[in-house]
Length: 269
Image (cartoon, helix red, strand yellow):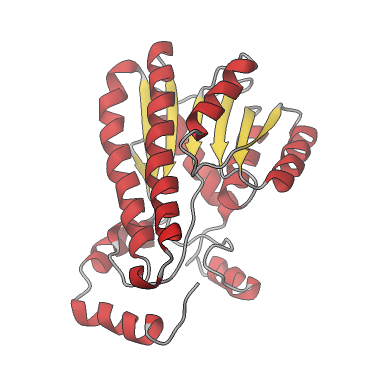
């Protein structure tokens, strides 16, 4: 499939749309004239962001408050689309959570949240939209994984494991849907200057300046371009792509050093 060059008037559904990279996705798409269904569990922030985007870019931006950890979330989103006769062209599964804590020290409810959000929601939304896109003979899905999917490191077991699921699932789904004119792209970002990892503003700015981190705006623009081209996978930055082999092959003593210096000293989030 070729690239979608003109997306004016098309509709994108974006989850986790009220902050961070999700909000950057919305702004990038709106800048290109794309309508939005913005999905988030931050009701107040979502309404404000949708209103701001609609005014700034002159596009329809529909806010939809949904808890994506709920089993009924896909039906709620599809029901909203159907009730307003909205036909989506793109789905961006962006919503996610992060914590730096060992599995045994993590509340079971938080463990369940990782699975519901990164596995259940991504799977069920991807399937629901893939079915509709298959019937239409076109459509694109972008799922957010992470560089951590190659990193079995202590402290991020749930995050990296569920992000690894997203990557493998998305790559396989891409091949399953190719014959129907539907593409699935998985993005595996490395360092992004957001609040996810709790870095200070000066440190984030310094890291961006030396290109250790990418800005969320820059990442969103490039990831959208990859999705519109129907690419299978996107990893931002040469350094990140090269480091995959290095990080994935770290010896056990190094991983244990991380555990003892960070986890065992109580640095948790």
